[in-house]
Length: 357
Ligand SMILES: Nc1ncnc2c1ncn2[C@@H]1O[C@H](COP(=O)(O)OP(=O)(O)OP(=O)(O)O)[C@@H](O)[C@H]1O
Ligand SMILES: [Mg+2]
Image (cartoon, rainbow, N blue to C red; front, top):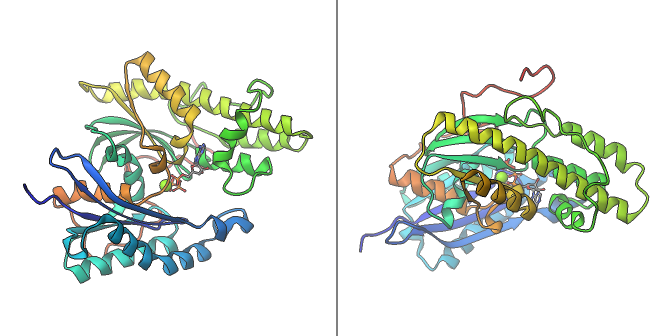
């Protein structure tokens, strides 16, 4: 039996401090041995959003014992680790620096390779943690900071097909929640409230619905919610607005995903058409089931990470580390933290006023 790689992953790009050990079985399927996540919700709650300085301080306080616990829980010894993979971007630079420096120091002390991971590539590969997934595939990445359709051609090779031109979808969920008076982080609560409301009560805008290919826009939706929320008087109206928002988002994603399917097919002639949905918003069960139905209609195979691995975690960072380790793609210890690090470096910047679609 050959020795399988044992990878330590570290994540600290925003408000989760996380560490994980993964390996793979004899069939080459990844095995998560430990996955420790410490969220900072209580630190940031009173401010209604993430405060970078407090987030960095909290990462500093916790990183040692989170990594120690990940090693202890894995049942493996520190000297068995073959490589250390840390998130190097995108994210808050003061936060990234904590996990990145810790990972570099750890790798150096063990005299093992260091791998600098793009956090978004972690999300992109997260379904590999529980299923076999071959390249190429179409990815819809819907998270707190990003909303993109990407043609994932191979490890590290991404072609962006569409992106949000303003807010990310997770951000739209969080802002809507805030306007409805739901405590930070409110995004996941919208789904819960929406179940009690009438999705047809409010007619909300769908920006760039009929133009712009599979690019997305959610800022106008938020403005409309702001206007309506001001006049809301009853709990039922709140549920109705949450339900109308959820329904509008589903309609936008349904239409734009169909367009992305055609774009993906123009660029690839895959034997099997695969659609992966990842990032925090992929935890939304209604969005999952709507996109599964669309895939059935369109003869695509749909794949999602397990719900608990949709948000930020270090297992997905270790997953990228595992693939990179097998290809011997290592990084030097002077690899910088990169607050901005798009998966497709060649894609045009499409944000702000005056964007031509
Ligand atoms: N059930 C849900 N329905 C809708 N949104 C959700 C749900 N669960 C989580 N989210 C949203 O997912 C986002 C968090 O996802 P994630 O942790 O991937 O984002 P991030 O790491 O902050 O951003 P990025 O990965 O783009 O840097 C939040 O905006 C949150 O509101
Ligand atoms: Mg994330």
